[in-house]
Image (tube, rainbow, N blue to C red):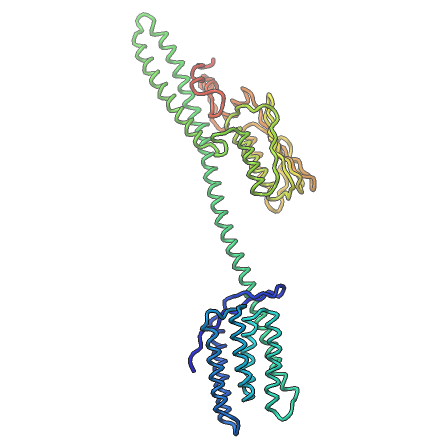
Length: 469
């Protein structure tokens, strides 16, 4: 007999809806079903020729018809689960099988293969009904050839039907579970890739911020001090060069002026580097605009309503202070969206004469704060997910001479407040964070020329002041 083509894929059933899906059936199972049908047809024909009486030629002809009809199904593209062509093909196949069952009782064995086809190509409910009717027809056809009906005649077909139903249902459940796991693995791989990208971007931003702070607190501050000292020295040399017999000091004054100009040019270049490495949210905009964008972005991405309020008149702040305020707001809102399960949050920036403060308040589940004071002496008690973000915020505030306060109670929400002093003295202290203090005239000159991108005093203004003594 000709090798039969591949059977269409067996479906995954949805019992609740009664619709049929499709899932890949291993090729070995499809091959086994084809071989089973072919072997049962050959066996029925062989037994018909071996038995006395009957119509062996008729059995052979009908068996060939059944085999040809069965082969048409896998060959026809239109015969697929749930299609009308599949129903028509099954009807013709079962009618040919009934004729073969009328000729020989050995055709009853083919009913087991038909059970799988019915459950595979039809919806779950329709397939169950037709499986039961096929089992009844098999029992009736076999009993028609016997002198008397016995209960044992019904056990085989109905037991085979039960086994077929259990196998198809179990395969559907395994296929559905496999698909769920495949989707979960794909989601985990995508999440891991996104996390790697986010961590890489965070590392780049952190390194940019570190470089900007290092350049500002070392190179820029040193160049500022050098050009101020050279400016003061050049002025004194020119005064001394006017004295009789000291004309050679004019040349020295020119050299000092050239050195001062070179230091000032390099100072401008250092400030441009610091500005280029500043956080992207603060580039081309103010701190207020950056906080508004942060609140809007958090509202959009985390589906958490975040409102922003400004109290007082916004003023130009040193860039390190603006960066610290923005980073604290980002970290606090990140903790809120991840852990607080809050319904809303509020970010408030308050600008006063002597200090600027930022408050992030949510109505989430809160936690046991562990007595974190304004001075940041004690840490909040970390929960199972960490709690080190608050420690990082406290360290950032302490670096710039500020303070961090955390107030939270279980079920009562959380409030994170950071405050920085502002004013001439405080601004100078904030800009000087991380630099190495010096002594004598160098320290006084550095204090006089200390500036930062975004502050009110530029390098030229600082140079014009001269050294403070």
